[in-house]
Amino acid sequence: MKNLTDIVSHFAIQGTIQEIAPLGSGLINDTYKVTTVADSPDYVLQRINHAIFQNVEMLQNNIASVTKHIHRKLTESGETDIERKVLHFIPADNNKTYWYDGESYWRVMVFIPRAKTYETVNPEYSYYAGVAFGDFQAKLADISETLGETIPDFHNMEFRLKQLRDAVTVDASGRVKEVRYYIDEIEKRAEEMCKAERLYREGKLPKRVCHCDTKVNNMMFDEDGKVLCVIDLDTVMPSFIFSDYGDFLRTGANTGEEDDKDLSRVNFNMEIFKAFTKGYLEGAHSFLTPVEIENLPYAAALFPYMQCVRFLADYINGDTYYKIKYPEHNLVRTKAQFKLLQSVEAHTQEMKEFIEERREKS
Image (cartoon, rainbow, N blue to C red; front, side):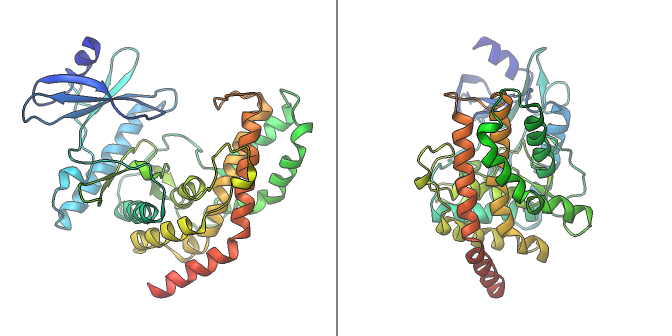
């Protein structure tokens, strides 16, 4: 614990440290709550996962640009309680918002008091998520700074397909013959699923500043159950709006588990889709273009497809990227994501009709 206290001492915090204890159950960074004595603010200490976020300077510059812009927008609109509605990072004694101890990179932010997160994915919280992430994008639609890609090609479908095709060519574990059906099904859809990159090259689809990790538990709620702010900004970077829209639905609207062995449990929940889409269109209506809105059903299919491609590539490569609990785990994940994709495809017309109905009402 003395080591963590030493690390915090490099940041310009107020008050005297009373305790430093693990916080939350995040899978990427190591997170601690720094409790101070008396009326001083409490803080959050994080060790940044340098294996995933290899350019920490870019990462922190992105976050600084985003939080400053949101703070200004909140101030201009006359918002109250602003300090709980945007993340605030504490400078270190190197005049940066992170500190390197020789092995690891650390950062400190103010702990948001009287706030909580939810794991629940139901229509009510899906609607709140839609509004929050749509509004997050809307606030950043006119940001002047150009952000960097903290994880290059993170949601680039052409890149993910190349990874799969390379894996098939090498066939490192001799598994290609076993999964030929899924390779063929993926290839049948490949041209359609790379639509976003083509539209971008044609100048028809813009890149936005997106969150790129849209989950219900990446929002903070106040005592009355109202959204305070979006958190976990490490993956905020330029992307298509499909990233925030489709990624939420891939997990939130799946009636089964990501690695469900019982495929009969895996389906696309249209009630979650409708609630999230209603909220998202309300939050993002100020900047969305017709081509972005028209392709929201495509985005709902894109993300189970992309994850199917990634799980299958890893299975063919011999399970070198995702942690597995048993030898066929990545194949089970592939099958579950493909079943979800098929369910999304079956609901495409219904999704289009719902989106058109919402557009007519707005």
